Length: 181
Image (cartoon, rainbow, N blue to C red; front, side, top):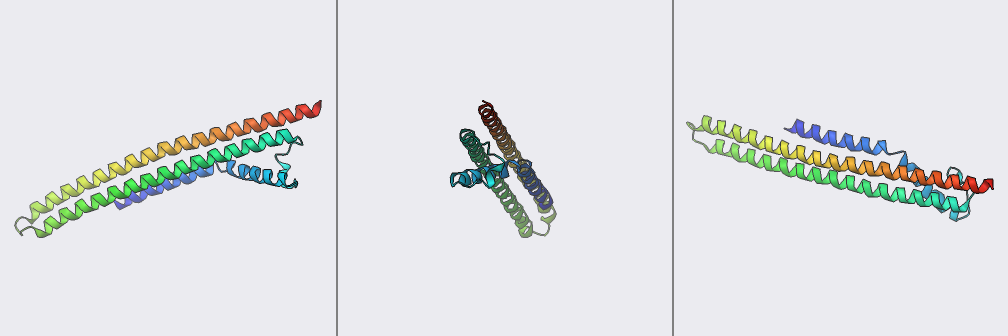
C-alpha cells in the first residue's frame, strides 16, 4: 500500500514538474517583457532589445500581450496548485480512513478468544484488503481528476502563449509596415 501511494505521489509530482518545464520557455519571456515594460518606462532600453520594435505603439501592444500572457499563466499555475493540493488532501484522507479500518480489524483479532483467533484473523485480512482497495480507488480517482485539471490548465497556458505570440507578431508587422512608409 505504501509503495503504491509513493508511486502515485511520485507520478503526480513528475507530471506536474514536466508540465511546468514544458511551458517554462514562456515564463522567462513574460518576466523579461514585464521587466522590459518597466525599464522602457524609466527611459532605459537595456533589456528592451528583444521586444523593442522602435515603434512606441507596437511596443505598448507587445507589453500588453506579455502582461496578459503572464496573468493567464499565473492563473493556470494557481489552478494546477489547487488541483494538486486537493488531490493530495483526498489521498491523505483515504489513507487515514484505511489505516483506521485496518487498525480496528487488527484490534478485534487481538481481543478475540484463542479459539476464535484464526476466524478473526481471516476476517481482518478481508477487511484490510477491502480498506486498501477502497483507499487505492479513491487515490486513483483523485489523481485522475487532478490530472484532468492540470491538462486543461496547461492547454490554457499554451493558448495564452500562442495568443501572445500572435499579438507580438501583429504589433511587430504593424511597426515594420509603419516604418516602411
